[in-house]
Image 1 (cartoon, helix red, strand yellow):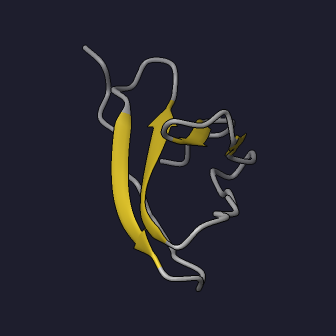
Image 2 (image 1 turned 135 degrees about the horizontal axis):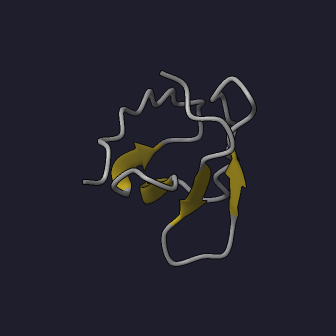
Length: 68
């Protein structure tokens, strides 16, 4: 199930984006290295992904769990 308009941001910054109506998003990362990306959506538990960014596009398909 796609989550439209989910908040996606880089931890420790104010830089982020939101997913579109189909749940897709793009987030530009300025520096190479370890990056923590946070995902938030009302009614779901926050999700955190850590990537080792090397200057090339990375695809993250995230599944978020319902907040009970």
